[in-house]
Image (cartoon, rainbow, N blue to C red):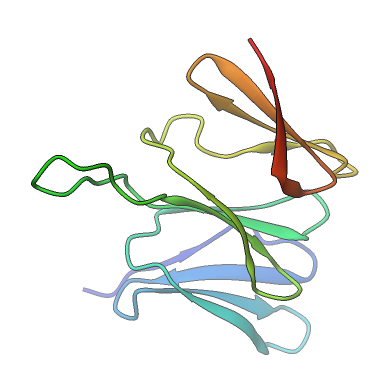
Length: 130
């Protein structure tokens, strides 16, 4: 079975998940050039930030059989460079995606009844509100 899922198409980029390749690809819409490709075999959710600078991806959270914690399954990628800006553990698919202000100066995500805020897509520093 072949499965192709496209993220919300923005004016410049499209992200696709192709299950038989187990990769997420960012492709330029204007010239169909492959910009970046990420090895994310179980990605089921994709979302671009409002200004198309960050691609958020989510894969189902899994733990190992011995009960140790799983690996982060929510990744934020810089669309221009392809680098992973930050990875988080996000167990549930519901409300998985961070929310940005239109100008991307503020990003927020819900974590266990707290809202974590980030400024200017700097995901190394977070602020909390309960």
